Length: 442
Image (tube, rainbow, N blue to C red; front, side):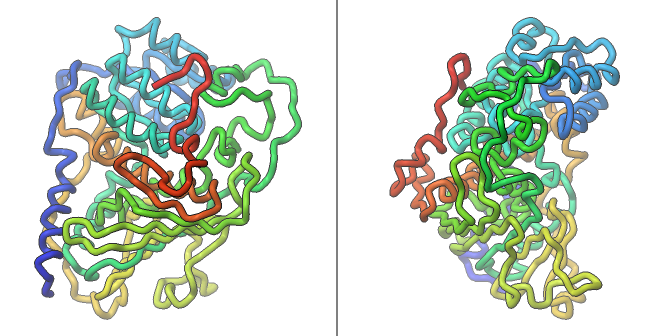
């Protein structure tokens, strides 16, 4: 298979990028010895926080747990005897500063940035769920704070650590499907209500510390349609279907093609009321040429929308002739690569007959010992995690959340990535960099 010089240059840079996150081996200010236990504080302990706290317990000691819901807190306390309980992460970090080495942050999206920033500024290593932040500015700022405080970080997009995803990236970077012209990603989300208003105000249940839930967001009265799960569909608290899933489902092409800093994004949606995200959306991202990687497009589909049937010709189907309701398809000028796995960890080269004897390139990206173990090992002096905030998770989150600017504005956004400015849409400035409620800052 032949490749032009520009393509070769891109592959060299991409291969280096694939290991660059690991090669820096940045030493943290409070690096632990290999045999020393890590003391974790877990912020948000149910939902995804339940598995994050279990991962932390396997990697060290849980010394503190924090949740705005006393029911969640008490349930977790039964599993982590001796862990001190808190409803306010700020009080926890203040009172237990010297006892905490690292935190897990598994809160609603709107609190990710303020919680993570507070912890990192206190010298704590930080594992934060996807999407890294609620806004683009926050994503970039968390990367800066991580570097300034020399802490290890990892975002909870677990597919990053899968050998299958890393292998797919190597295959794409090797030129197996040629120059990638388009990436199509679709999801079965949302699986929570969108395209509607708030429910009626109700008295706040005694177990819920509502002011702590609101955090940096604009204060509103308690409504039962927000906590504990449906907050994802609200502009004030979540990032919609795109924010919830794209850090997983776009991760494989992002790693392979370094899909960062789009020049524009355009959304078509069912419309929204400024309270919840649309019932459905399709979003087109435009990426410029990068180090020999040609310009390409990313197409996102949610709320039941799918790529056109002709694009899915030859894609594997179930017994009823249906394509998976969540998938990723990269179209190159020599072939295609398809994954129906949300993490991109299982993939197929298409057409199958063309690749039946294909063995693939040599490994260029290090394999992972496990997503959370990468984080724990890094705290003890190992390589910096792949999905660290400054080099990987932050830029990925910036790319993903850019789509919501166009969803909000209802028009194409011309994007200045360096300065984080929507050149033709000053009305989205508050979405790019939100104003926090008093008492919260980065």
